[in-house]
Image 1 (cartoon, rainbow, N blue to C red):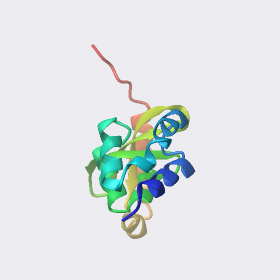
Image 2 (image 1 turned 45 degrees about the vertical axis):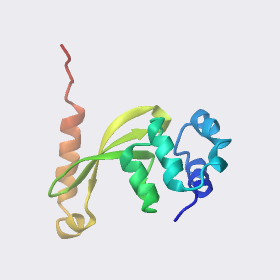
Image 3 (image 1 turned 30 degrees about the vertical axis):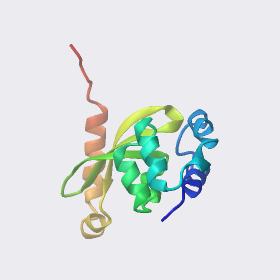
Image 4 (image 1 turned 120 degrees about the vertical axis):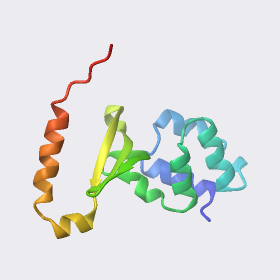
Amino acid sequence: MISPGELFSFMVAKSFLPPAKLKAIQQEVDNYESSVQFTGELVRRKLLTPYQQSQFLSEQHEKLLIGPYVILAPLGEGGMGIVYQAIQPRLDRMVALKVIRPVVLAAKPDILNRFHREAKAIANCTIRTS
C-alpha cells in the first residue's frame, strides 16, 4: 500500500491541492502510520472527498487527474460515458466534466460531433436562481 509520504509527494508533484493547503499538511505527514489514517484526516478536513480517498487507497489516484482538472466525485453515468464533479484549479472553479468512453469513440467516430453539439448547447444555457 502507498505510504502517506508517497501520497503527499504525488499531491505536490501534480499540484493536487492548492499550495497553501499542501503547506498546512506538509509538517504532519510523518505523524501518520498509514495512508488510511492520512487520507481519513484529509477527508475530515475537507481537503479530500471520500471518493478521492477511495481512489488513493486503491492506488488509482492517477485517475483523479484529467488534463487540468482534479476529479472530486462521479455524478452519473450514461451510454456515452461518465460525468464527474471536478475542479479546475488554475481558474478555481467547479465544473461538470463529461468523459467519453474510449470504446464508444472507437465504435462510433461520429459521436464526437454529438458531444460537441451537446457541449455548445450546455454552454449557452443560463442558470437562473430565484
